[in-house]
Each structure stands twice: as C-alpha cells, then as structure tokens.
Amino acid sequence: MEPKMTISEAAAFLNISPQGVHKRVKSQNLPIKRKQNRFYFGHETSQLLFMLTFSNKIYVFQNIKGGVGKTEMTYSVAIRANLYGAKVLCIDLDLQGNLTKGCFRVNPKNKPIMLDVIKDGVPIEDTIINILPGLDLIPSDLDNGVLDNTLMLGRFPLDRVYKDKIDPLRKKYDIILIDCPPALTASVTAAALTADEIIAPVTPDEHSISGLKLLCNEIKDIESKYKTTIPIKIVFNKFDVRNNLSHEKLTYLRNSEDFEPKLYSSYIRYVQDFPNAINNGQTIFDSFKETAAKEDIDLLTKEMLGIEALKQKTNEKEFIKSRACSGF
Image (cartoon, rainbow, N blue to C red):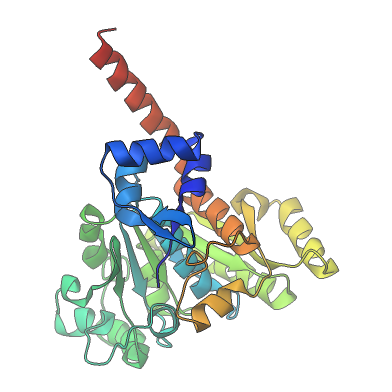
C-alpha cells in the first residue's frame, strides 16, 4: 500500500504549475519520490506543502442497509484526506471487521478492540494501530459482536460511553472516521451520539432508500430522546450512468424535501476500481492512472472536509504574512 499525491494533482489543487510545485518542494526540502518517471509524495509532504487546518470532526458512516459501500467509502476518504495532510483515525465497529482485515490488511488477533475499552477499561490509546504516516486504526473483530449486550447489560449511558472515550482523541487527529455495522443497535446509537456528522451512503435500489428512511427516522428519535442534533449527509453511491434506475433514484433524492438538503453534490460512480484495489491490498490512490473512482472520492473528500475553503484561508494567511514581511 503506497497511496500517492502526484505533482500534477498538487499543482491543480494549488493552482500553480508542476514546476511551481517542484520549486516549493525543493525550497522547503520536502521528501518526494519518483516512479515510472512520475513524481509523487505522501502525507508528510502534503502536510507541510498544503498547510491546511482541519476542523477536528468525527464522521460516522452508517446505513441500516448493508452492501451500500459504506466501508469502501470510509477507507477511500481516509486515504484521500490523509494525502491532503490530515491526520486520520479510523475506528472499525463492525464485527465483520472488513475495514480492518479487508481494507487495511490488519490481523486483529490478540489486539485490543472497542469491546476491551468498554468492558475491561483498556485505555483507548492502547487499541490504536499505525497504518501509514498520519493514518491510524482502531481495529475490530468478531468479539465486538457482544458490544451491544455489554452496553445494555452494563447500563452504560449511550450518549457518553463512546463520546467520553473518543472525544479526547480530537487533540491528536484532524478527522476521525467511524465505520458502523448495518444495524439499529446500542453500539450504533452510541456512535451516532458521538458524531459531528453522519455519512449515509445510499445506492440506486429501493431497499437502500428504505434503509435511509429508517435511519433518518431513527436519528430523529435519538435526537428527541437525548435532546441533541445529529446532522446527516447522504452520499449517492454506485451511480451507473447507463442504468435508468440510477438516474431515477438520484432524481428522487434531489427532488425530495426531506433528502435534498442532506444530499452531498458529489456522488460516486459505479466502477470496479474499489474492490479491485482492496483485493490487491492497495488503495485507488496507489495507481498513477486517472480514474473516475479517484476523481469522485477526491471531490467527496473536498466537500466533506471543506478543503477548498480551508485552502482559501491558508492562502489569505500566507498573503498577510508575505505583506508583513515585505513591510506593507
């Protein structure tokens, strides 16, 4: 696994020429690599080159319907955010552990998981595994299947049990992404009550839309019970331009009074790049090839994290700094 931010991508983001990027990298003595006659870099260089200040948000990926691409999306957004310089923590709460074992290729055996934090008081910091520079994971395995019973039998306050453990980690990470199982459970409720924003992937089929409706109703009930507000954002996933049903369901969401305000303008097209990369132990950003998958995840990550606005703030700070240095 070697996700890449290419010089050409950085140039497009910074609105300068590739030569301009090379000049900045050289002047700051930042690490850069070369392969197949292409120049690229990773998290550490991005952090110093882009100088983006993120908002320390917790995003919870959730839908009652399985198979909507929730885990692939968590994984891909984590990688792209990391390539923009964000320090990212992923938390796998799904007992199947697809994010842990399938995406990050981590064997969770004999490693502490969230169950150990809640049941046995293991410090949450002890569960964290480093994956890449600036990218960490709290893994999951089948033992997390008893999290719900543990929470209910122990009468843990669902509005505090995860929040009290995870909130202190905001000091260390720019964004925290939580991958939940496709269910309405105590653990999922506790995760929702930790979120700054719930990300609900939905696919162009009726069962997925029904799952979205159930999720929105469930969140309303949680908000009412705990007297809080939990923003939900919808991501339309697996859009197939050749399929009438894709156009029909996307149009439905865009015309819905309930769903349109929640719908991200970015959507993810149906391609095989995601499963192919994961099956090969890679990310979609390991390749130099320009693909629809990379373009869509890049746009979604920028929209989720407000990266264009962050870039503008950085540019303004640099302008003020340069004016001060020049004596104006």
